[in-house]
Every structure is written in C-alpha cells, then in structure tokens.
Length: 200
Image 1 (cartoon, rainbow, N blue to C red):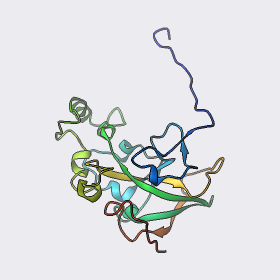
Image 2 (image 1 turned 120 degrees about the vertical axis):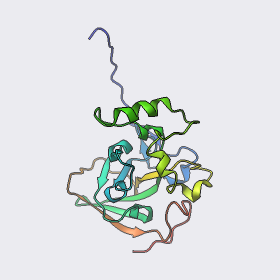
Image 3 (image 1 turned 135 degrees about the vertical axis):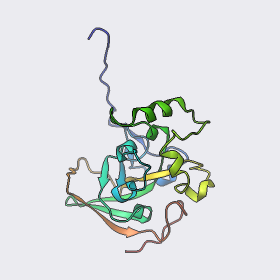
C-alpha cells in the first residue's frame, strides 16, 4: 500500500536485563527481556478475573499465560512455580502494577462507548470511565498505596521470572499445568519486598 511504509525490526541477542528502577531488586542479571516492559512472563488467574467490573475482559491485561484457578488472588501468595510437563522452573518476581492501557478494550466490539470515555480521560482526571483501575484501586494497592515503588497503581496479574538461567526455548500448550511449589507467608500486596519465608 502506497499510503503506508513498514520496517521490520528485531532485538539483538544482547537484550536488556529486566532491572529497571524501582523494581531492579526483583530480578536477576539472567532475567533478560526484549519487547516486554519488565518480566519475561505475565500470568492472569481466572478466579481473580471474576471480580473485575462488568464488561471488563481479562484480555485487557495482556497476559501471555492465563491460568485456571479456584480462589481469587491466590497468586498473591505464590513464590516458586513449575510448568508441567516441561519442568520449567519459575518464580514470581512481583505483582504487576497496572496502567491506563487496561482501560482500552482489546476487541472491536467490546464496549465502544467505554473506550471513547477512557480516551477522553487523562491520568490526572479519574472518572467512572477509568475502569478497571477505579475499582481495582479500592482494594489492590500495595500497602494501601503507601509503597513508594507502586504508589497508587493497583495490581492485577503477577510477573514471573525464570528460576536460574532461562532456557533457549520452551513449549507451552493449552492444558499444561502451572504448579505452585512454594508459597509466601504474606501477600505480595502486604509485604512486597520481604525476604519470604516460604512454605510448601
């Protein structure tokens, strides 16, 4: 098409480490990303999605793994994980703080009026259109909004990193199991920077 010009780009093998402030302490030097904001993997849990406001689909959070769970926000207590049958060892790096992109429907037929309202709303002028952030901010802030790193940003989904060096390649398929190996004693939202005493 003469109206558009496209360029194909790629990241070199020397990709940046996921150590951006203020969350650098959450990651190891081996945690390297390309197009991601921070973590190699982002996981959404189906039981937690049930509490989202009406009309807000889980795909707004752009997770690359959606896991079927039974208890809302059980992921707040996950520590070490294992993906089966591959045996890939993972760990929760931090809860994912959410931005205004989550207010934009990902499907063309998903509440167009809401999308227009969100587009008119600035980051300094919150309104009813600013969902799901308005609702999540009521109960999903780290330390009730007092944490310097997270501030007022609500959290939904968890960022995962690899336990040890990441594999050169790994296959994930529908029906695979993400098994919780160890759990935190305290919720990530209560004590995100604790040195977790983990229990099986």
